[in-house]
Every structure is written in structure tokens, then in C-alpha cells.
Image 1 (tube, rainbow over the protein chains, first blue to last red):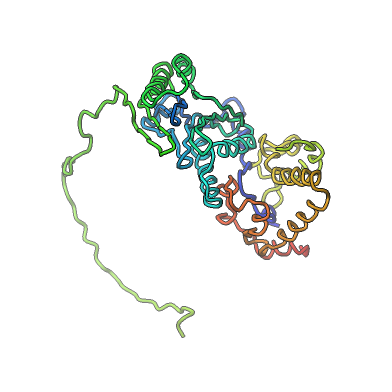
Image 2 (cartoon, rainbow over the protein chains, first blue to last red):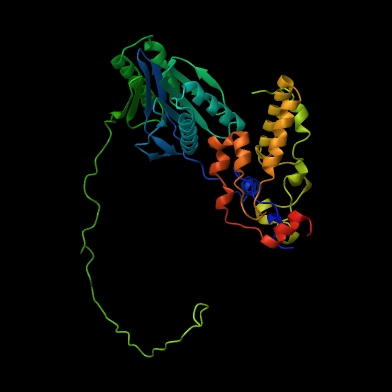
Length: 278
Length: 142
């Protein structure tokens, strides 16, 4: 019997059919080894700080694909809910998709219950989802938001670990950023101080880490609303193109021109019997 | 999340040997997709998540029903499982995708979005089984 494997319908969700094939391809014989393409990572510096009236989140804007900068103006601060934003480090596609799904789930929840979601709810959903996939989803996230219980800043790791702290940095540039934050963080800062602190922390990450660079984005979340400042500080190395590289029409000279007239030799009309006609 | 009693549930899950049937079309080894056949390939899943994903919903349900039984007594999971079985029987013909609306409402997955709603949605599947063969298989006439 042909196609005996279609007797049961395919399941929804992740499909692991090709994993055996991939393993065989990667561990092939010495000449036949094929390397899988590497996913685009964000190689990031992201940071967050809780201040007097809310939360300030910051991120750089470089996305790398191995040694090449894939995106110079990547948006790493993702919208989750009107009062919750999330910075994502790790594999770019994973952070995008995870935050998209989280945002959809929270929207459905707020439509169902008529309430604004709390930050703990977003964190719990993320933890469950990431733990279920045992770290295969490479998303290192910093969630910040202001809800009815106050301002909160959480980090969620790719294996589902969670931490609640007043100041945080994640990503490949987190060590230099953490240094700045540890040195200058105080409780109950005001807005300008907090923005300067986060901006300097990201700047330290950009200077000391190859995977972070270009501009700095900031996102200020308060009870009244959100201020998404993109970009907050632009890189001084943003060069403009020196000339236009588009070719004007008529740049290519026409050398000669030949015209072949096609003549109509024979024309036949054939009536077809269709089901509609009698 | 309740992890008590997880060990006792594992023995009832989908057996590993049912995991990768090596027969492709015409009942012959499908070397392109499944690699060369060997006992090791058939015994273990190739991806660490394959087994846990296959059994995830089953295990969740079992844990939840066990907790419910411990808290409220045997009647609670019994009544719920009766409803689940009734809802699971509402299906279209075997070769058409069913919406499973009643089952989703009972489970509470009708107002949440997971990877099973985005990836490989059966409604958008490009392959359809042969209607006659699938119905005969379902009715046991095959």
C-alpha cells in the first residue's frame, strides 16, 4: 500500500522528522561533512534599572551573524503589553517569536478579564514556555513594567530561570554594563539620572564587547505611559554614503538594433465540448 | 507546577518504539529522511525534545488529574475525564482536520497561543491522506 504513513494525520507544533537526517549530514564521512548554518544572534548588551517612578530599559542596536553585522538598527526592546516591555538577547528569531507569543497571550488575557496584565504573569508564562523546551529556545530576556502593584524588573534565562532585581544587564556585553550599574546604582533615582546610568552602562558594553554596537535605544515605562526613545544616542561612526550608486536611465549605450517581424502564418479555431454547453 | 508522581506516569506514556517507524512509502526504508536503518535509530529519538514533546499533553493531564484527585477525591477527575472523552469524540471524517473546539474549551487552550497553533497547523497542511483508505482504516475494514 503506497503512502501508508499518512494513515495518521501529522501533529501540530514542532516537527522533528528531519533531525535524524541533520545528524547524519553533520557527522558524515570526512569529505562529506556539512556544517549547519548558524542562526543570527543578537550578541547584545541590554540593561534595565528601576527608578523612583518606574523602569528604564536600554539596549544596543547591533545584530551579528558570526563575524558580520547583520543589522545596524535592530530593535531589541519588544512590546509585550501597554505597560510591559521586554529586552531580548540571544538568538534573534527566538526572542522575537517568544515575545510575540507572550504579547498575544497577554492581549487575550486582558480582553478576557478586562484587566491590565501584571509583570509576574508575563514572567510565569515565559518560564513555563522556556522550561518546556529545555533551553533549546535561546532567549535571554529582561522584562520590565509598571502595574497595579508597582514597578518591577525581572530576568528570564533560556532554561526557565528567573531573577527579580532592581538593576540588571544581560547579553554578551553584560559584564562591562554590570560594572557601571554596580558602581553607580542608588535606590529611588530620578528620571535623568536613571537614563544617564542605563545609557552609560550600554555604552560600556558597546565599547568593550564586539557583539554590541551602533546606537543605544531607551524605553522609559511609568504609570502614566511609555516613552520609547529610539535612538537615544547615535553612534559617532554612522557614516553617510558619499555618492548615489543608482544608474541613471540611458547609462548603458545602445550599439545596434534589429527588428524581426513575426508573420501570422495560419489561424485555426476549435470548439471544445464543455459540460455546461448542450 | 506539581512534579510529584511524575515517575509513575512515565510508564503509561507513548512507548519509544512507536516513535520512529522506519517504513516510508511502499513500506520501504526512507533513507533520505530517516537515515540508514539500525536498531539504535529505532530505539532512541534523534532529538532530545522529541519524546518529551510527544508526551507533553498526556503528562500534563495526568499530573493535573492526580492533583485534583488528591485534593477533591476521586469524583472530580472522573467527571472531568468523562467530559473529555465525550468532547474527544466530536470529530470530522478522518482525512479532514477537526477544530476540536469543545476539547479546547475544556482544556482551557482556546484562549492561549502556543507553538502548536503557529507551527504545522493541520488546517494549512499540504498533504492529505487518501479519503477512502483513511476511512477504511478508521473503521477497521482495511
